[in-house]
Image (cartoon, rainbow, N blue to C red):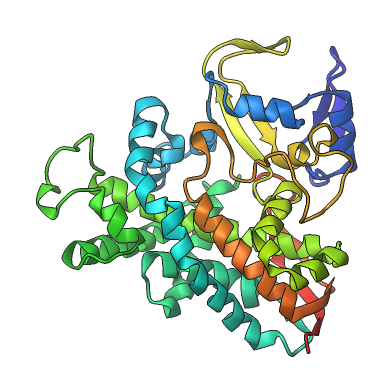
Length: 410
């Protein structure tokens, strides 16, 4: 898994190897020797301070924009959608899209949804809380994540399996087998486009006080839909592309992060008991989980020009991976490793950072903060059962199957 570059002794990791894990002792040991490592993709940043600084560096752009092209997908519906992401825009265009979308993602709008998230968590937990066991991904994380998206968008909640199924297939775009799976991926994309088009048309006919209506308002009145894009409005294509990105991204990250949260708390039973006793710590619990066990294991950037950082020359085009778990557990920022939902911490990077900080972080924080205390109150003595399966410990990760054992609360 680890070697050394032949000329400079900098740590080196084979991140595509079957034994690689970003949370490994080898990575943490490398962090003590160097602020960065080398990989087959480029540089990997291991420490908190350097990660925080580079996330805001003006000569680094969002790196995942090149992923499809590097895997041979350069045209077609998937390539067009990928290129449209607000995450993949820079400069004035990025600022324009963020400015127009921000009102729909406000803290006030997210706060209004919290009671529904809490009730949803209770409804799902009721199904298995008396059994003493469950398969957490299938019985809670997946339906909860999909129904949160349904609540946010005003979709009928019984349609959550469609959201889950199509989002799951779309996630194959993130894998090295994207060309092999391209037909399946583009069929899923077309299905989600149809959902988005229907939502947009419905809100143009009957505006509501909800997320989609706020986003549609940023697109201007229906009479203007045929005009060239106005710089102060979202085009129909931008509305549709943004909604599909929200459906996909919101589902995938919430499902994965909930599973990782339960794995983390199973290793720290005293903290699980504390959360059950003090549900007001739900928000802090979500932050602490994302610090030590984030679903987004690394954040990718790409150098726009040659520059030097801490004496290291970084040529234009270099991929720079900011390893969020390594930064989140860096003892220079956080002290010796501990998991404590009452502790004051330096910022984590579970939502990225800099100008590309996650637009939907208020909703993501809220749905985690509401779900975790409900689970802690109902599922005592949490343990991981046999047969757990997890995605590779790199890039974006999370449990595929997570059997849980617990004592039902009296």
